[in-house]
Amino acid sequence: MTGAVEPGDGGTTVEARAPGRVNLIGEHTDYNAGLCLPIAIPAETRATARVLADGPTRLSSAQQDDVWSGRPAEAGPGAVGGWAAYAAGTLWALEQAGVALPALDLHLDSSVPLGAGLSSSASLEAAVAVAACAAAGLEVDDALRRDVLLPACRRAESEVVGAPTGGLDQSAVLLAGEGRALLLDFATDETPLADPVDFDVAAAGLALLVIDTRVSHSHADGGYGSRRDECAAAARALGVATLRETDAVAVAGLDDALLRRRAGHVVTENARVVAAVTALASGDWAGLGRLLDASHESLRHDFEVSCVELDVAVETAREAGALGARMTGGGFGGSAIALVPAERVDAVRRAVDAAFVRAGFAAPGHLDGTPSAPAGLLRSS
Ligand code: GAF
Image (cartoon, rainbow, N blue to C red; front, side, top):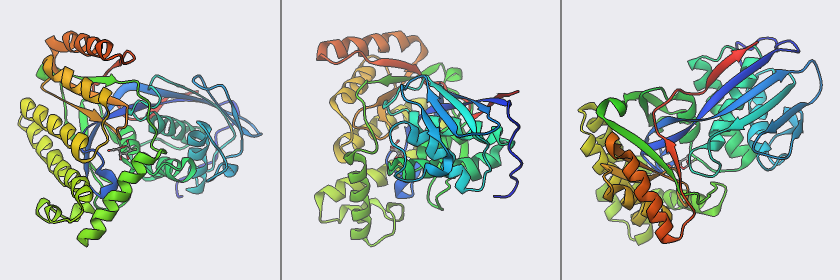
């Protein structure tokens, strides 16, 4: 990599942060060369890194009991397990990209709930990447985020952790912005085109609620990978390289009913992202709400990645006054979002809580969905 400088001296301490994310719309489209519209949320991971004069790097987390100690070069695919694979894997990928990292004592602390579909993994990877690069003496600017941090975080997740994810999460936490959503287009290559889209919910008298069902999920589990395989099979059956290159008419002609439903979701979801951007440009919040609802129904019935807790959260939020609601992220558990008039926020939360009690589910968590700043450096001393 060009532009690398000498690692910082022993004694330097840096603190970095990286947010979690919710995807407004455009689900299971990233690995189909499609469109997504995420925001960064206020929940965040903090990474504090002290540069050591010498010795192995040490990684610890307030949320984990075990500590990892070693050299990033030893943290490649297959070498590290558990939570440390995300953190040490990011350091490994940075070194592979040519960043000369000093030895670090790096501590993590996160308010992004784990396994809640809010990208706790990408948040951790991005916080580690920013802290490590700052400790190495690099300036963490937009170019570094896009050209170095994003590919490194993606490599850590896919090659070291072994989760076959599509890039939405790392792009969102590294490139999103305060008061904005981010239109991501994965058509061109591994690094998506990223365009900011105004998303000032508060100015419109609305709030974006995030409801954590507390049903934990993991993208390293089989469900996510099998959806990817089915999409690839549908593309093959249609004679296209990716589902971005087809349309609803062609998909309707697929013989296999399962592949027809999976591809149907992807094609219609891409169209909903375009419609959502148009709705936001004209301040049509009710229209955006209807698109959220339609996305959820498509994910529930055609892509089959929702679960009963997500469906209860979504339906209850709508009945209690949300303009629209949907599951967000990969599904099989995790979180829902609801677009709600400010004066209905408490009523919607109470209604969801009561519905979960009635259904015998564990109490849901409630998070703030204000569009927030991307990963960055907080201090260096
Ligand atoms: C998860 C994955 F990590 C993303 O890449 C994306 O595919 C998403 O599920 C579904 O849209 O968050």
